[in-house]
Length: 292
Image 1 (cartoon, rainbow, N blue to C red):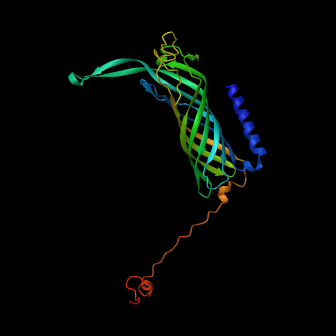
Image 2 (image 1 turned 30 degrees about the vertical axis):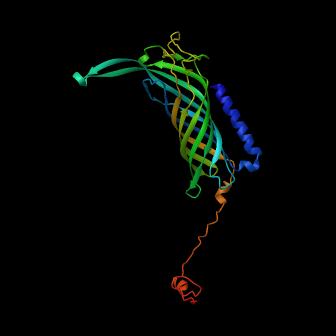
Image 3 (image 1 turned 90 degrees about the vertical axis):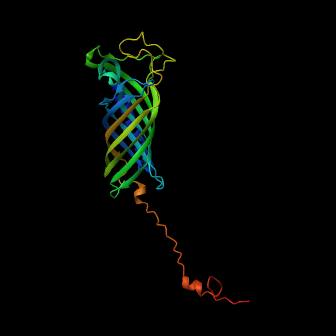
């Protein structure tokens, strides 16, 4: 955690230097901090019994650059987020049979293994937006390409069936680095140079948290940290979180696009004069032209 704080402070210093040394560009910059919570889950293939893992905390930094060109409605930026991810896996179950005859069916009661993963996320963001309420409200959607690095992990078993502990990473079995996509939406309330907002984001993982069975086939020699006997073929992680953001705009005046007045397009009115067409001696239906 101390190293994470050092990385965040270094990023703050770099972004602050950029905004203060570039007077023209700084008019379009904002720097924000965020914090929130969400839910995580894994998409295993072949399918496994899983359930949502609630309480996945997140906090981070966001930098946005808003274009000076009024035709480009949107911003580009980069985030540095600390995100808790993970999954709950039903590793064993007991069966209960109900019904009679052809209606007899099995009900399974699962015991769950939980794994929590602490990750650094680096989304590269595009954020289209519109302004409302006399430029006091910014409503946006966003799309991002996300890089990630898994710092550490812990595991536990439901009802303390086995002792919980730190998950030991193995190079042949585990993936530290990952990538994926993200999409979201939200709004910012602009109070002078301060921006207070709300954001919801879905992180869709493309990489796997575990290397597939072609590389790490059998987990039989592992300890209780790994509940899989055979590694899954696919194991991407997804996360949905909501965050509160507080930002600072490096410009007292505001964004250039606020002050650009677009010219209204004049409509061409083509009025048809019926009486003039009828009485036109040069032609037209019903005209009084000379016969030859």
